[in-house]
Structure formats: structure tokens, C-alpha cells
Image 1 (cartoon, rainbow, N blue to C red):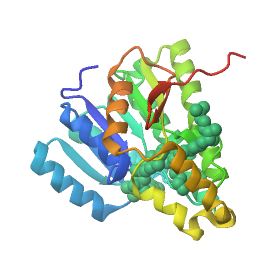
Image 2 (image 1 turned 45 degrees about the horizontal axis):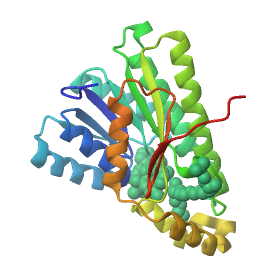
Image 3 (image 1 turned 30 degrees about the vertical axis):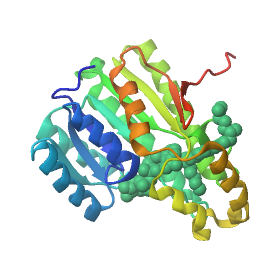
Image 4 (image 1 turned 180 degrees about the vertical axis):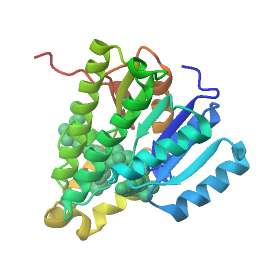
Length: 258
Ligand SMILES: NC(=O)c1ccc[n+]([C@@H]2O[C@H](COP(=O)([O-])OP(=O)(O)OC[C@H]3O[C@@H](n4cnc5c(N)ncnc54)[C@H](O)[C@@H]3O)[C@@H](O)[C@H]2O)c1
Ligand SMILES: CCCCC[C@H](O)CC\C=C/C=C/C=C/[C@@H](O)[C@@H](O)CCCC(=O)O
């Protein structure tokens, strides 16, 4: 998929991986709707992108992925501004083992909400142009991260949901590819949760185990993830893939045939 003039929507775009994904899409000629609950940082990023790529290449929209209404409004505004989307990245996510319902609402339900809205607007069976949805999982979506059991559950859910959507698309002919990217530890603010007992809750005592995992896996920089994200967006042979991104390299996950 060539990205020139394609329309992308990225959630959690204001910083971290979402900013990196948005930036590589802009660098490759796409127009990007930047959705985030953090209005201050999001508006600041929009100014930065305006200076780098031009004022008509990105759009910041305040949007909490916990709200179906706000996501629907963001899609409508994006369509009014840029046209129907071709690319959807459900990236927004948190760690909160204390308020675990919030983590489920954002990390899993927010991905479902965004995916279903993308299906509604991209589905070739209902007038859409097709396209690609890249959901953001985690290595914790492929194996347990002991200090964050609910986060682990949400990410396992994102992996399974995305693979099922890819299969449904293949069978039904939506013309949409669905893939999930599963990075290990990446240098972003979410890593701070490790040192915030209010985020790790009853599992705060597992901090040493997590530090050992970080030591074992290392910490990746955002651009190393972004370049692999771009592969999932542009390679039209990729549907139903889970791409693990580690410091030692990346690999497509092979799941057991049942
Ligand atoms: N950093 C890592 O080690 C790592 C590894 C694997 C996967 N991930 C995943 O990457 C994604 C991005 O996280 P990050 O590492 O960039 O962290 P981050 O905290 O730097 O960025 C998360 C972004 O999501 C936004 N956000 C949070 N809740 C939201 C909501 N309800 N609605 C809209 N936006 C919301 C935040 O404002 C922020 O801009 C998450 O899904 C996370 O689980 C991160
Ligand atoms: C407190 C910081 C939380 C960061 C959460 C991010 O999503 C990063 C998660 C990074 C690593 C998770 C590691 C999990 C490791 C083991 O479960 C291992 O079994 C996973 C093996 C996966 C595979 O290769 O199949």
C-alpha cells in the first residue's frame, strides 16, 4: 500500500508509540488524524507536525477511546476533513492494575470500539475502500507479564481479537487487513508504571521480577517499533499477523494449529 494521500487514524497519538506511528505515516505521505485524551500534549504535537509536514497533513482530535460517542465524532470529523480512512491504528493503552476495569475499557474495549468503527467506514461490502487496521498489543499479549495480570489479559485479548477479525475479513471479503504489533519494553512513559504502586497495585512487590525482564529483553526505542509498524501497514500480504518486536529483532509469531 502506497501511503501518499492515504488517510490514517491513530489513537493515543499524542506521545510515545502513537506519536512514532503517526510520524512515520506522515513521513510517508499519509494524512493523519491524531486522537488522544491528552489535549495539551496533542495540540502541541499538532503544532510540531504542522511545522514539519504542513498544516493540512494532520488533525488533532480530543478523544477518549472509552467513549463510543467521542470515537464516532472523531471518525466523522476525520472523514469531513480528509475523507474516508484507509488506515486505523488502535494504540491507546494504559497500565492500571488497581483500577483494572479502566485498563480493560481502554486497552481492550477501546481497541474493539476503534476496530468496529474502522470496519464500518472501510468495509468494501458497505461502500468502503478497504484498508488496514494495526492494533497495538505487546509481548505481554503473547506471554504473561507477572506484575500486570490484567494488562496481560487485555493484550492477549487484543491479539486474539485482531486475529479473529483478520479471519472474518478473509472469509467475508471486507477488503481490510487486520494485524497486531507486539513490542517488548519500549522507552515511553508507560514504563514509569513500574515505579508507581498505584498503577501496579497488589503486584507492586513483583517489581524486581519486572526489572529482571527489562534487563533480559532490553529497552527498544520508538523508531525501531515504528519501522516495523510501517511494514504491517504497507505490506499487503500481511493479514492476521502478530509481529513481535524485540531488541534482538522482530519476528512473525507462529501460533499452534488447533
Ligand atoms: N512502552 C512499552 O513498553 C510498550 C510495549 C508494548 C506495547 N505498548 C503499548 O503501546 C501503546 C502506547 O503506549 P506507550 O508505550 O506509547 O505509552 P504512553 O503512555 O507514552 O502513551 C499512551 C498514549 O495513549 C493516550 N491515552 C491513554 N488513555 C487514553 C484514552 N482513554 N483515550 C485516548 N488516548 C489515551 C495517552 O494520553 C498517551 O498519549 C499502549 O497500548 C501500550 O500498551 C507499550
Ligand atoms: C511495567 C512496564 C510494563 C510494560 C508493558 C509493555 O507492554 C511491555 C511488555 C514487555 C515485555 C513482556 C514480557 C513478557 C515476557 C514473558 O511472558 C515471555 O513468556 C513472553 C514470550 C513471548 C513469545 O516470545 O512468545
